Length: 380
Image (tube, rainbow, N blue to C red; front, top):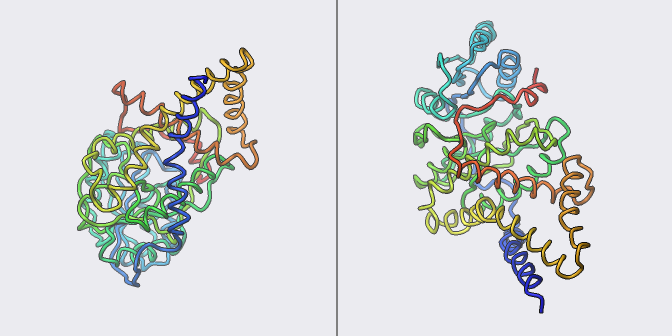
């Protein structure tokens, strides 16, 4: 018996088992629709937008907010701003020509990072509900009504939305978001979901807990702390938003790797939640630990073991395995895998998580992000 072949087969099986378990759970639960008991209501809402040199697109975002099906008299726009290009002045002039909503600008002369700026903005916002969004995103017109209706369920402390379109013709990002939304739907119907989306999430102001000033995933951390406080945090597919994305491997790394670092950091910081908090700590967090922390390393080890096993069986011809993996990646980033393209989205996320793990182990990670100008072009 070839020990390498047996070891490779066992490792591949162990790596795949939690994924197969989640697929089986999805088939069993068959999640659909909203995970909340919704009720129509009209509380005051503060729309918080972190901004850094968004002068070219801030009017587009404010038009997006004005188009929402919600009374302007009950809306407050809060800019957590650190710009030096006059973003806040553009916003003041734009909204100054209209009856509402009101505008509050919290300006920093120096960039402190997103998390501390948002901590201040969330605490100083006056609305009963806080809705966080990004300048380089677009919202469905009914998103606020859907958000407050979901939060009317006393068990729900925070809600995020579903991305319905990826601007920029990125098959990779579209496939990833499609898979992710299914996972979030399952997790939300079980209890709560782990990942929240910065362009579209809402929570009651009274449920907010300040987040780590060095956080690299402020959106998900807000939700995680609310879940720690005892309320569910869910993805409701009736809240819909649009964001941009690219398939090019190197261009995706800037956004994906930093995001992955933030999620990994949160999992480690809040590891004491494993096993508690209902199905959130017993199912959702363990799977995210497997997918984000353990699986990327097993993927690398499995690739090496499968290659070694193939070489032990057929000699140098076994090197076709790493060549096939490289070819898969090459075609995947060019959206050329046909029916297998969604699989590449999972592999791509594993690459980000692996890179993020290494960078965190090396002590890297800053809350001051680099602007992704390409993602903003669609909104200029």
